Image (tube, rainbow, N blue to C red; front, side, top):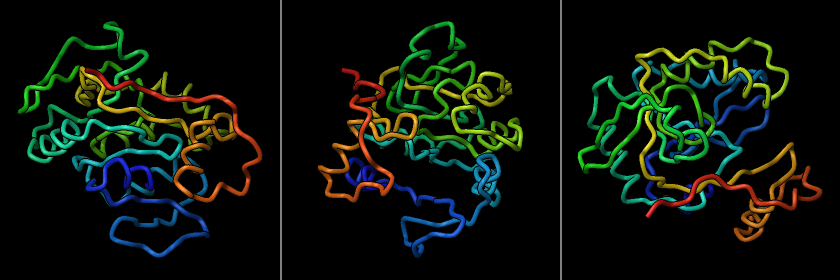
Length: 223
């Protein structure tokens, strides 16, 4: 949340944070939601009172924004806000890895009012990156998972087996508009996350002992 406040100071979000026992008071920008411990149940609890067609910004805490091309991102927000049609159900603006390969795209495209191009994704590739999604997409995705997920990384295997309905149309911007940092690797702070925390004057987590020694980032701003 701190990084979004710094990189996108006028963002429109009210973050929903799941908790079991520890929480802070709600604020205009933060809402705490009592949830189970289990991963699947936690996500479905966060979505419980939302309509399937509602737009949300899916942003799990193992990534954080480093740089954003804000004029373009603001354009996406305005476009989705005024685009009620169901021909768009998800927009990701970090194009990387598998989504750079044509075989992972359907070949269908769509343009926003500014003429920016978006490419349709075949599957759930890059679903863990921050992006706009309709509630029904995320609900369907997690409902396909077993109730018992032994560890977070196991969801990568589940993702590959998840069947995306053809009418859930997910897009990625043709040009990359953001760079994300990875917060941890196997439970250890990445070098970039450690440096970001220290630079910002924030408190390091109590469990921190050392960093991975490597920097992990996703995406590079397109020209």
